Image 1 (cartoon, helix red, strand yellow):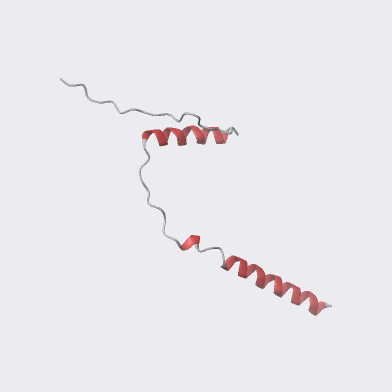
Image 2 (cartoon, rainbow, N blue to C red):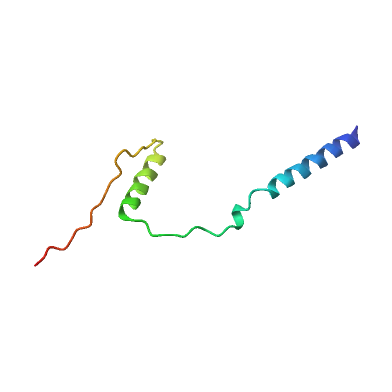
Length: 74
């Protein structure tokens, strides 16, 4: 009986180790390119972060758009 328990533990351990080894290799892949966020993306991230802290589910119907101010001709 004791030998059966040891065998079951050994088989389970091998199965778990095999599952960890086949995680898809995402840890070794190169990171995605980091592009600077636009003003709109920064604002959206800020609002979503606050909503998440407060437990609010947020759905953007019309995401904010910040227009660049153009210099007036002189």
